[in-house]
Structures are given as C-alpha cells and as structure tokens.
Image (tube, rainbow, N blue to C red; front, side, top):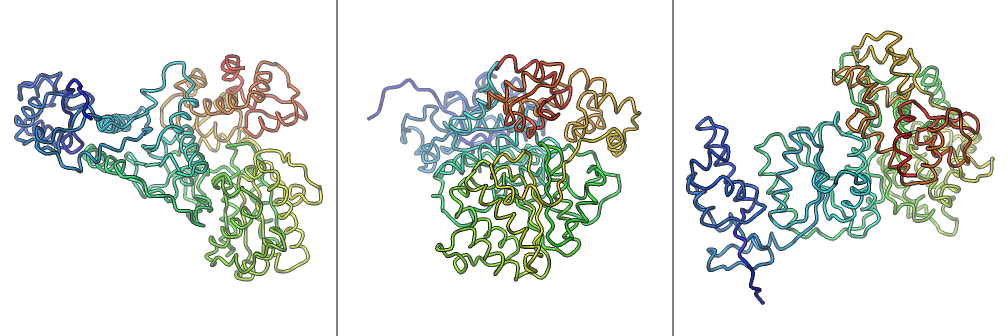
Length: 621
C-alpha cells in the first residue's frame, strides 16, 4: 500500500553520476578552467547549491534541474541515470519514463558497509566518493572519519563497525603506508568471518596507487590470500570501481561452501631472492617479516650462523623465543632459506593465520596439520588411507609422516612453526601436539626415517601449559633468545639508511626506544626520508600524530582488553625501580614486548613506553 509522503526529489545513480562527472571534466579541460560550482552555475543556469546537491547525491534535487544541468553539457538524461531520493517510496513508472527493472533491483538490497581508508590523499578522496555513491543508493556506510568522535575509544568503535557490517571495503595504500591499525582491522574481520556461518564481513580490497603485483606486508599477505583485489591508479578509475562495487553489493552473495581447503592457513611465509643485494635500496618501513633479500635485516652474531649450522644436522630442533616485533619470523625465514639452498624441502606454517575452526578438537587439528604439510610438498591427500580412529589421532598423525610424507621426499624436511603461541590457547590440543613434536624429535635420534625431519619452533610467550618435562619440546634442541640491537648494530643500520650518525646520535635514539628492532627501524626510516629530525622525534615520540601513534594505540588497546595487564603495566611505569608481578602477568607483558624481565621483576622495555603508558593508563585503570 502506498504511503503519502513528501516528495524528496531525485538523485543520480552511479551511471548518471559517472556521465555527469565525465562531461564536466571534458568541459573544464576544453576551456582550461577548474570547473568550480560557480563556473558550472554560470554555464548551466542551475544554482551552485543545487549543483553541489546533485553531484554529492546525498539529497534529492528537482528533476527539472537535473535535466537542465545535463542539457547544458550536451547530455540527455536517461531514466537509468536517476532514481527517487526516498528509497522506500515506489517509483511511478509512468511519470519517470519507465525506469528499468535492473535499476530498482539494484537498490532494493540494502547492506552495511565499513569503508576503511587513511586520511592522506588520494585515499581519502576515493573513500569519500565511495561513501557518497553507497549512501546515495541507500546503503548504510561506516567510516572512521564520520563515525568516530573525539573521545571515542578507537578500537571499540572499529570493532563495532566490523561486527555490524556486511562488507569491509578496504582501501590499501602502498606497503610503506600499511599501518598496524590497518592490519588490525583485517585481522579482526578475518576472525569474525571464521566465527560466523555467513562468513561476514566480506572483504573487498582496493589497492590505491599500489600495483597488484607489488607485495603486501607479511601479515596482510596472509589475511588477504585468495581474496580478489582491484587496483585504483587515477581518478579515471573511480567511476569504474564505484560501478563495480555497486553491482557487487546488489547481488546476493552465493552460499558458503565448506571445502577441505578452507581449513588451510590463508598464507605461508614467502622466501624470495637467492641473492642479498648491495646497500642501494630505498628505505623500507618495517612491518612483519623482513624479506631475506632486504639490506635492512640486522644479524645478531653468533645467532644466525649457529642456526645455519644446526639446521643441517640430523635431529635438529631450534627454538626461537622473543617478544613481538623482535625479528623472530625474519630469522625463521632466513633459516628456511638457508635450508632451501642446501636442497632441503621447507614448509613454513604461521599458526596465527589458521582458521579458528581447525582448533575444534585434536583429531581435526592433526588432520589439518598433515594435510597442510602434504599440500605444501605437492603430495596428494591420502588421509583416508592412514587415518584409523581405533589408533587415535597422535598415532595416525605419526604414521602419516612416517609412512607417507617422509618416504615421498628425497631430502630433509624443515618445518618452520611460527607463532605456536596460538596453540597455547587450546590447552587440550597444545599438550598433545607439543608432546608429539617432542616424540618425533626423540625418534629422529634412533630411526633414519625421522632423521629427515628438522623443526623450528617460534613463540613469544613463556610456555605456561603444564607439561611433563620429558614430553616438552621446549627443553631440548638449540634455544635462541633474540636480544635487542646494540649501539653498534644501530649505527650500522643507520648507515644502511644513508645516515652518518655519531655515537651521541645513536645514544639519543636508544634513550627513547632502547634497542627494540621495530621501533629503531621506524625511527631510521622516517629520519632518512627527512620526515623529521632526531630532536623532533624526541619531542613528538608519544604524540597522537607521532610516528609511533599506531603502534602505541595498538599496544594500549591490548592492555585495555585485559585489565589485569593494564594494572600491572600501570604499576611498572609509575615506579622508579623494578616491580614484582605475578608470573602470568609478567609473561604476557613480556610477550607483548612492553617490559623486560629481571628475574621475577619487571621494568618498561624503553622510555617511550614509560612515558606513553604513564600518561594513558591512569585514565583506564
């Protein structure tokens, strides 16, 4: 039944908006003018406010004015170029020249979209145009710029947008500008997908000035693996992308098929060039794994050489432990690269990127583990031939490796198990899986078939799973604790950034961030690009617009999520001497990289953390 409502006018559809913008661009180019609203008003006789309303598509305009504007620029207004500004009001087909069914169909499916973009151009302009086009059709649009107010908790609002939206429209800047907060949004979206049967929010990535063949950072490469992406090169691409997005949103997504491949991790570590280049590259903004070909990887002797020597020995097991962003994954990649150059098979596996569904129970987890390793070695899945429930999951997994995987390869196999902390969250699985790794290591000492297997285990936290000392893989093999950079290593890294720093300048940087590898590299990157000086860094290090703002906000959010950690950190940064904490608190703060452990006591890892959390934690604890 029709409702009596005030007419709200007409707004342009995506095709109409594209037609108008192209005509205005051609007109302004022909006359060598800017094409301002005032100039358009003078040419068309349509008031500047009305022109703005028509171009923005937020409010309805009189149909006669739209026709007048089109006619002034030698265009004919077609029925498919416009629609009612009141979506729920049915079209009067007689009055509106019989609008095609496709027009109403495309606007009848209303969805919620979170458009994520950075504040820099051209990302912001593209984001605003996408927002305008989506809103014009009637979709509900969230953006950080419009929907996060001063004083709001950024992470809480982002989480709300992600939970509410059907689609995450993700504008991806070049690798150097891919922040921790961008990675966080994608990680949260993937976790929501894993926990929902409808797999929402659906991620739609658009690379902005960022070629499709250019690599993403390590984490985004994993989260966006197998997700089709689009590329925006210039303003000429905008209407094409808008039209494609609108068409996609108008379609009902196909039902999600449960396939065995869905249980695979989304991405593995990539190992690229065989040769390490000479110091001639542009500075790299750190983010995740440092490529093995990068000149900015800093060796910490004798760690690398000792690992290279160990991994080529039968029964090798290397345990790499360090807090977040200390270089664990980069070291593992280089060890795997060294093994590959010896002709070994290598399989890197990042547990942080494994779907939550895989951890449903031990049987499912071990089946996935076997299938994944086999797939990476290009071996057909033969689980049905080796999996007999009467023997139990661990025996079946052992048999699959011993009787199928290892006999199929002619060289040693190195398994790189990164971020194994993820398994700690599932104690029932962790105890059995870690015990299985230890059993394989012991088997390799007495049976030739198992001598082929070499293990690298990487983790951030202390192992707090109660385990029999004889069943744990964490008290055998080569232990590697990655230290911070020392002053000589920082001076060498500065030179690779074409910075001729004195000892005093190195000391000034270390007074702010210590030898934390990630924080040091961020500083050198920005100083080498003349974004700021070392003195300016000292003044702005903890500022909301400073170079560490994303990193510090992410760490603050980590603490806000766990009040007992926030309380512990507040005590530490407020004290002038080391603070004793409960073991679990200390372990978790250490794994986040926020503190240093001195026996049973903790101190802030660096002055940056002391200053930032001293001023921010008092408000949330």
